[in-house]
Length: 188
Image (tube, rainbow, N blue to C red; front, side, top):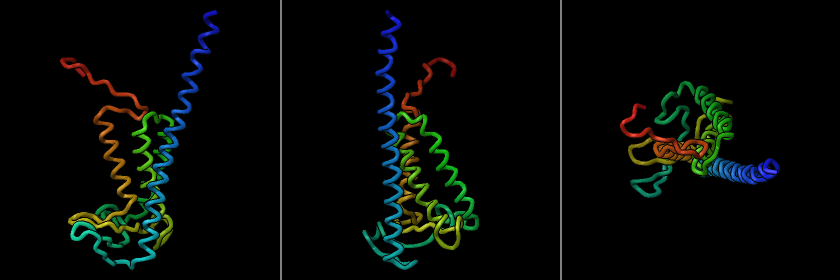
């Protein structure tokens, strides 16, 4: 008699875990799509309304739109190895997708979604913009004083990294569990 009730009691936990996972994957996909679409729409707006090199004051002296095309990474580092950034972004995107099976936290869903959306936004530029396939230059247009010129994809990636750092510092694992700190006075 006890054996018959045990599986029935275990069933609700299994069905409850599936909807939670579905919600987390939906959050992840929503944040990734938002970051990607927002990035691509702003780049379309910039390329269709501005000429390269044009600078428009938005909140001077704090914020300007300054349309450039960047073949390198942040601060134009690595301008002669654009193809390396294409490979890195593709690898990061695939690695994020492999991590989804471990996903158990809404905050991690947000972080990984923003990270994927940002990586795909700049990867799209690398693959399909001039001068050639996989060597394209990224459209950057947000300029702050004494800082690199960047775009929405870059902002999404940086935001994701900040969230990941905070989650790690708080001891929240990808699966949503908390990492136990060793007790004081014990060897760790």
